[in-house]
Image (tube, rainbow, N blue to C red; front, top):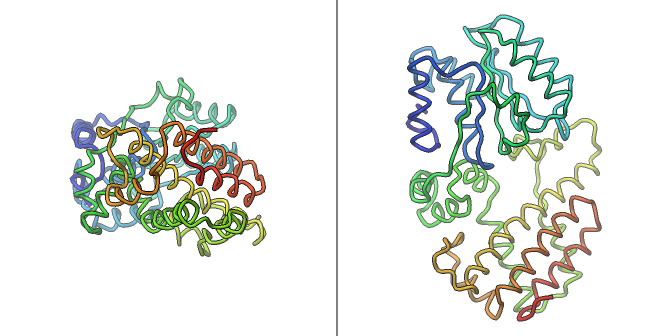
Length: 360
């Protein structure tokens, strides 16, 4: 997959290739933008370009080095993620130790830091010290969706690479390689033009989950289902089966591979994860409903292929009542994070989803 196939804005691709051609990439690069804008794809493409055996200022994706980098099996490529809420100081010490050593396989050692904003004061200062006294054989790629969460002194030492969403039509065309045109457009809209977000939505079965959530809304608003029993079923039926994070390549599933958690603890975390995913889809459907009842025809519809069904489901609502539903969904997500009793949270939410015509 050469640079022409990397899912990022054309201007970003052009600027990076120019920097590579002029040998102006720099030793520390901060790749930032909204969640899912393509930070990981751009970082891996940079790593492959720097290390590729056959091409200059591009990569072939077929040489042994490119393949090992793509498979995260290259000896001089180190990927780090926060082990807990923030990076642990031991992770930074490991990075410092590796940075001192000469490359094993090539000319460069590449350090890829996911969620670089998730550092406490101690780990951030440790990283800063490493960047202040860089070794010429090191290349640091810092990835974030929250640049304001990174120490300004770290940001000032980085070449900043800002990623913006792709035009919906461009992303939709890319997605048609694996999806029907209608489904590709829906995912592109739901992702807001963010390529990694679109891939994540596809991998996490967004379209299937959306159909489940639409069925919830129908059951509550049109069929008068019992809210308590339905809430209990919602918590159970959103479960997915996975033995390890590799089955579902979402970094939020890191806990499935943790040796420190019991099966019961993993099941509880998995239940929370799945319900959160479904409620996030619900937010998108409420957002489309808000656009419908407000008459905002200029606002892009995220689920265009389900427009008629969504308009029918939210018939009789007002902008005020839709705002109440949106805020209640956010409150429910917050309650889940606080480990409040999930069936009660969901039954309260379903009650608000059922109500129409008046805001509380």
